[in-house]
Image (cartoon, rainbow, N blue to C red; front, side, top):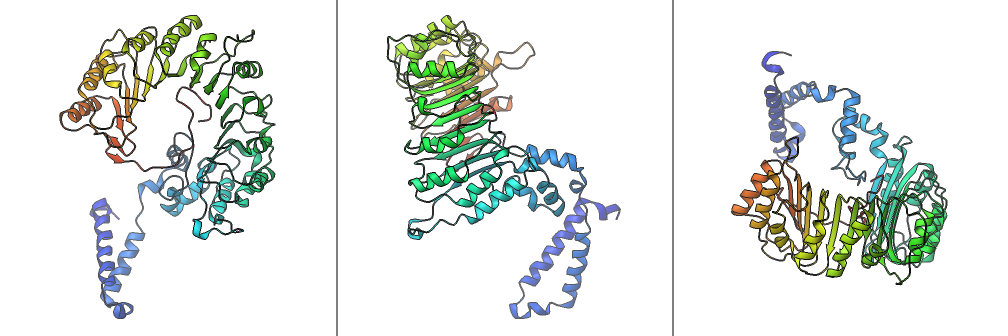
Length: 510
């Protein structure tokens, strides 16, 4: 085939003509469709033969390149939610060759992210299991296609009103040597001892390759029993526990942790145990801290912490300890005293913070926050989460380039409920974008403004035009609420997410 007959336009014309004939046939009276006019049937068969003979350049791309493209289409965080509209299932629907290639790439099938839901109340009987046969079969097929690659499982239980599907648990046990990451989120765990016992019995390990374990549990009633199957984990590097269980009762033994995140009340004695038990710890997150002052920290070497996330009570932690290698800090601020402790901690540690996240729980004078930022000349990433509106005044102060001059990422979050004053923000972003690196690249590269309320008014009119010009100039900018995203203008679907590590914690195997 040559000349006009080989052009994309000619091919499209043949496809359009075939579609018209098929549409004409479909519009015939149903009782006559079995007797299609001979000339229409001949044309249809002729065009089907022509269209079927078409070859497309995309189908001749080498296997290695297609494989690389398929892998690059997976989510950056490595958590794949099975869906026929997303990779990798989408690739198996394009053509026979792509399906064969996709099913043969083990890397596409080594992550499974899913939410188990119970049956509706009207369908739930005293001995009736919810219909999870389909997802159990899909999970097993997924793991079988992984071709021995390390496996990742993120599993949420929407509620605890059913017994765990045994098929799912059997698959976890069957591939025990391959599990590298497990994230299990149960808002209220499973509400009966039989389910807990079944979970531990069917998936009791061992898990010799498990390096990342995260558990989000609404109640600690059965946590200890379930954690029993995770006691012997020789490769465990990253552990996150969202539960009220005391640190001394967490059976993680002598795992070579470099990341630990606990959502429970931690005392100074607990911290001393953590420091002594995990001397190579680099990333530590403590949500609740309750120090019995004036107790003193135990003498001895401190782990080389590089990132630290602190919740309420974190000021007591910073007032007693020092970490010279610290680069990332997440910190909750309730009073001016909390923020005043921060410069003293930085000076005592002689650390060079490059990433700072502040959760400001109450309004306070900007003087205290500016005093803190002025002792951080090397700061590159600043994120502030306000419980009350407060970013507008800080935008005015950040127009001064004497404060955090090397900032390349800036993020605000606040509960604005109506119209946000965008002019100070626009002016601050313009000023920051004029600052260039020695290579001529603007210092400020990313800006994010998030509102916790859906009622906030997103940019429009002149404000949107000015912000749009900054985006055209290369600034990666995002302004969003729980329902909308600007400048993409897309509607955000609500979904049940597994708790993610705080940005200040660089958790491996993300």
